[in-house]
Length: 228
Image (cartoon, rainbow, N blue to C red; front, side, top):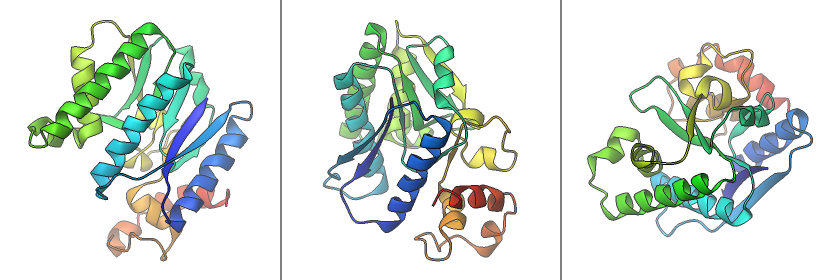
């Protein structure tokens, strides 16, 4: 099952992002069930609050379903069958990149096992711990509550098999766009790539013309627009 979460709030750009999420998933994973879960936004409206709230909701939802799941952000364009990842042995699989902040929780994989359930509970506990101690330097070291708590859970994990899958294949973000693999399964439509995809009417006008002129973004944006 492929799952994403969106907030019940007006934001027209996300209608387009979600449309591409749905249509690209239908093309490349026609037999895979898709679920778009609407949730209420958190009381605080900062970006980190949004991400943390959504990831907490996702973990609870996955535990309730009791089945194998791929959980991903709604700003994904699928280019291949993400279910292929389940050919790898794991309880939990996360996407990693060669960077100071290695984890990106825009995509993660859950296999319904007792070990995976325990890991999910540990991940939630560590997230709540960091929310209660927002000055913990580990938050900045990993780029936010969700990724920092994931790192802590992986370090403390004693039973679950946690596989690290390359962002370059399963969650192609900024570090991957310039040399996108022909085998890529999902591209993360964020930052300046999102602005190129959405055009001048997007909320990201803050990006400089120099960044917007990155030639390698244009073919990705063209492919993304083909699903609108």
